[in-house]
Amino acid sequence: MKHLFFLISLTFLLNACCTKKFCEGTIYDINLYNFGASDLDTVIVIRYAGDDTFRKLLDSTRVYITEQSDGSSTLPVKGGVNINENYKIIMYGTNLEYRIMGLQTTRKGCNSCFPIRPASDYYDVLDNYNLNGELWTREDISIWR
Image (cartoon, rainbow, N blue to C red; front, side, top):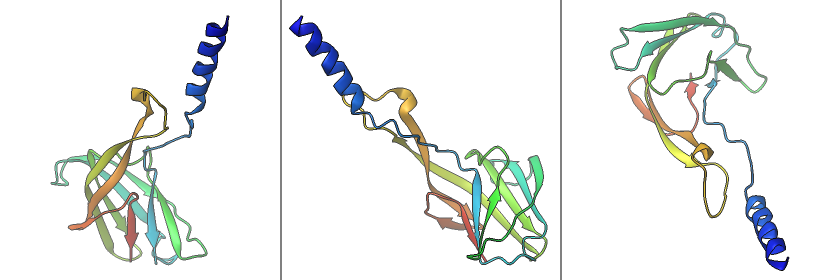
């Protein structure tokens, strides 16, 4: 009986060490900084196959954005950002175009479970991306004006 109680207690103890936090690796938004309301009037997000040529169009969407009080804004990306695709963001209010490509990620463990970590407990974190030919090392996608 003592051994059964010990095994049950050990099972609960090992499961209790798992923090069970929610870890989401998908990026659903692109952060925009220093853009005014007129800059964000008409924004188009165009998705391309990730072959660096921006020739194979997959989808395009007009996005409505509101400027936040701190001067930042959030550009929602329908379905989330796919690291195997390239994105062109056209802002007609500024006559500017931003090209996002070459997204690189690292696989990280989410919860700290000892002694094993299930395969479903990993998620991808953005390491870097290329914005208009310049490499950015960040865990989110951000565009500054």
